[in-house]
Length: 472
Image 1 (cartoon, one colour):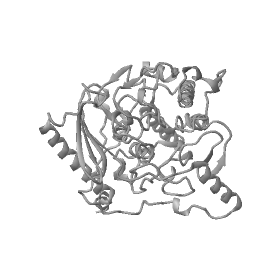
Image 2 (tube, rainbow, N blue to C red; image 1 turned 45 degrees about the vertical axis):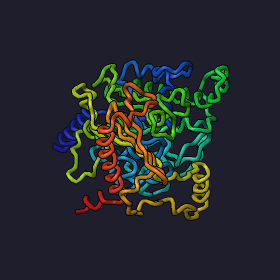
Image 3 (cartoon, rainbow, N blue to C red; image 1 turned 30 degrees about the vertical axis):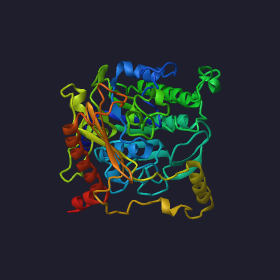
Image 4 (tube, rainbow, N blue to C red; image 1 turned 120 degrees about the horizontal axis):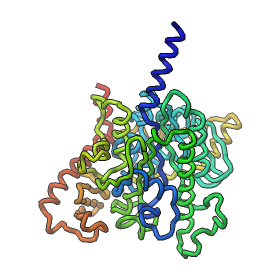
């Protein structure tokens, strides 16, 4: 009887594992929309991403939730605009009050891992703002971008690892896959490359003259492009490992960047990283999941906040009754072609300054303290500002905000001296060059009302109102 019971449990676990896909979310750091072969770049080599685009779902208008790194990462994990979760700019910490997608999938039976750049919390042992505190079973993570021979935190133990940071990130991802792919649980992996962020010292692997690649193009950004080719190589390694482990068909593999690129000429729109104009937000994005989708293109605008509700749907996890407001939507109806429109969504940047986080300097100090048995030299970084709940003036909507109601995009720019608006038709004017505020007054007013209402909702969430509701 005991053997039959054990056999039944094994069969149930096996059925669970095969019915729910493995999920791998890969994100680069500063990879611009136009800086891939499949998006038309004239010389940068991205053969693996190009191949992925040929077989998978290409999102032609996919947006990062913010024009810089930390906020976008927070949106991926929570499905909420970064302001709501205390991450208005780089270096701020995600509140442990939030429920992350890693926590939800872990509760549903997934084994979870994070590898690479973190930048939304601490990487110290037992910190509720670390990857472990956010729901990841195993992690090898850096506080911010890192380069060659980086200092990293492995489940809270600090070490320096020789080699390219981008390659080390993929090494850890592949080791996790190799270790657990035959187990009873499906896998959820978040791999966040440190490249192609400056200082651009990493070079492609196994290529003759890798350190001089793109020199003849006479571009001042050759290091940036070299790191794009390097991360593309790592995507090739990942796809090869999935094939070797017979995981390709039942694995959802998604790739995107955390914000717009560094070259405004190929950013896919006006401006570049750090801007609310299209060049700062539009990013390359591909989904590969052979069991569900053949090659296709999606022209409906989508955003990184959409990943959370989409993955909940895929995993069969029902929405909680007291769930705080999400800014993302479930993309499955769009992916299946049942819908080609989505509700408008907002952006906001410039309300708060960023905070510096020096990965190697900080983790080296932590490593030295750990070796000597001394207490952490950075106790203030364990929780940072996550338990501070500000009261906001609802009329103070400082910064640059935008409301995307495709094909229209309204900009609201508030400085200390004035507030002004811009309106563009992205379908006819993708470079946002012809301001239509004067000729579209009724549209401007309705979109302004929607945008400002959303901004005030965001500030309420940031002040902690959503947590009060969930405690009742």
